[in-house]
Length: 298
Length: 247
Image (cartoon, rainbow over the protein chains, first blue to last red):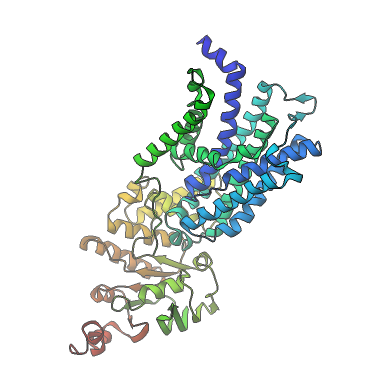
């Protein structure tokens, strides 16, 4: 018991808890659109990147405060969602996913090639930790407490969204859009709002990611990262609030025992990806009949 | 109440509805019959906004609605019941009715799942389910219902929406003979509430129970518009269904 407490309060335990916190925001926000709304949004990681870069640039270039960075990250990711939703939500089914993937690719290309702003593949270093009044969050323990406050707030907001009338309407749209429309539901507005909430929360996660690592580069926001978040939602059961929380903790911790196996680091990375891929494939195969139901039409 | 003027719907040059003009009066129950593919469901889709009309106008209480989105038409009182069951099978019966009730409240109202407003709406939804004998199954998934029960749920949900015009697309399709009587009772209840009802149905005997007027569609045009007795006696009806030799 005492050894478990020691692990949890060690630098390593706190590091894992911070990762879990960031991924909890990122995966629960994807759960709203992809899990509940059946919107196969592959640009979620782009919202995460926009949030991270907004914080990185503002805090390093203008020394903006924590509040300004957080608000800017959330607002810019939200703006991205409005633009993306305005275009991609006009597309149906697979075309929608391809559209969001294209948006994600554009953001990725901008991060690499808009060197005067993003510093390209070199990334942005020296991102300072947040400071609130006389309290700074350079110690990971304090940073974890700050993050947990936001995690709890975001999870509470998403719980209300998913369990209340908003989530109910989103589920109705996912199952039978035309029937929902004839029940007085403004289908495009509901989906745009779902996109907005989801993307804004991903921006917040990105902001904390940038603050935590003090350094970001485009490789942190690759398609591989998108697949990892998607795996969390699928393993947790799309649309399940507590399932996704459990899956986030499970999947962040899953590859950790590999660290203690005596293997060269060149093998460890691919092995971790292999583990996630096998798990994703297994769950999709096992739940293939219920994971992606076909939308009913007149 | 509802006036269709020279309504045309084309799919890639093929005119599915070709100049439909008629008026449905308030409180009237009208049956729509015709062979498969004659445009009955397309007519309902067009009225409810799921299919755009190529030309012509649709006026509800004197106001043209053809440019409105389906949800805007629903909020003006147009209720739709689908042939292939428009219920949400993965949701509970209570949630199905709640969705309709929530459309009549502000977005903020009942936003919190545990608010008094939400509890009030849940009680109201239960009272609607009681009317069709489904209150005991309120927390079960709608997928567990029989065809007849699904139909009752869909109609009562449309009533909960506050619709005053009901577009019922084959309400007895997939319904057992015993449950057909329950569906018929519910339609009679709608008539008692002075609702305007349009029913697409193949079973003219079923339609005769409620309708004082029957419209016969064939190849996208109105062929007959008269009382059920006169329509039944008209030789053109047999011609439409069985060909010119039968007449």
